[in-house]
Image 1: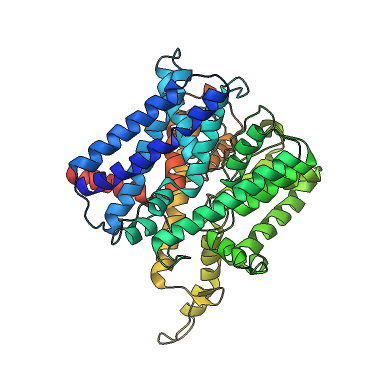
Image 2: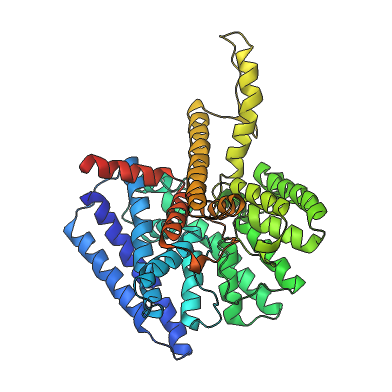
Length: 459
């Protein structure tokens, strides 16, 4: 555990720098600096303590997965400090609401306890957007990109983020390329939104939350301008596309984007579900945007989802479960896993009726899939669905309807942010369930389970 804390200390030192950024916004708008200054100092001091009192040694994959789980939890706990200042007069609710908002940001979910965000300080609006931007790329990827002394531990930490291949010569080079891609798209988004008529502040916040497929908004109602919605849609698609596809595009292979099986599946699902949804709710612009927002797990909506037909809500639930591409900022099961599961059905039938010594490989995009990958995928999908059903059952027990329960849990577990209920008015148990689901969805379940397993062993 001491080894994990040593690396966590370095990560918190880096995180402290990002907590200083809202201070510049607070200075510009003449707002209080203390919420962010205190959070930054606390992160720095805690990081220095962990760093100096523990020795770094090469991490095993088990430790790297535990580090991933712990880092998200600690960062979310520190990230709740600015919200505590806002909720200072709310008693115990201040703690659960602050933690909920922080977790929703760093997991790029976008569910919010605020009934109105336009009344929030500008610095807090920026901080909310920044948490989603960091959560989208992953604070640990930033950690890998900055630190040069990581050698033998870099690969386990990288693999613990769910990546199996890399786009650079080293893991550090890969992390830096990913941040470069992410940063370029963010800047393009800001520029286009400014041209579309938004202020720089609005554009920056909206670009942060769109490219990260996070879904926080700095206004109370979604924009209706078709040009702005088009730019947001582009950013959502880019955010839900694999970094490895973007790397090919940055190398001039633009057509690779359209040839990638997950990208084609994303568009296929979006258009197919939009066509079905149009018969239920005949408003093509609304239908397409909602379906795209659901499958990219961004969670932006131009309408009140609590009053739309159940059939339409059912389509959104399915897309929230499916999610976007692997190695992207989106959540959900991921399209690659959906492909593997569906392709394995005819493969298994063929294998069962063939001679025992027959070699029948299962392939995805021409590449054979190892049995270990197939088993892991199947277990992950089953575990994901079990968490979905059990969590929805808790909501039903609390008095919510079946559709609302499935919708809300699918939204939290898929890190989407759609809601058919008033999040701020939910009881503590319901908010706690959503927090757990957001963590499980963002970390893809197993790092959390490994962390809990290690705690049980130490108990």
